[in-house]
Image (cartoon, rainbow, N blue to C red; front, side, top):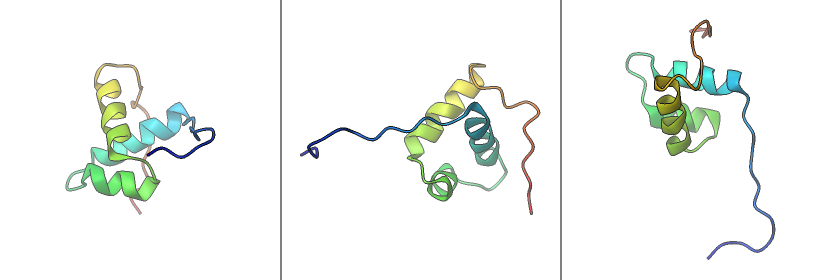
Length: 67
């Protein structure tokens, strides 16, 4: 049963979404692990990956520090 009161929703920047997608594309990295580390639901990350494939999220030029 849902909780009473207003629902909390978050707005993520395009840069955050693009970085999350890039992280999930690294070899040997699971979407679930990336989502957990960023405190987001795995479905949300999957949706962002789909949007990136469709060209609605630009991931080109996003740098990921692998350290």
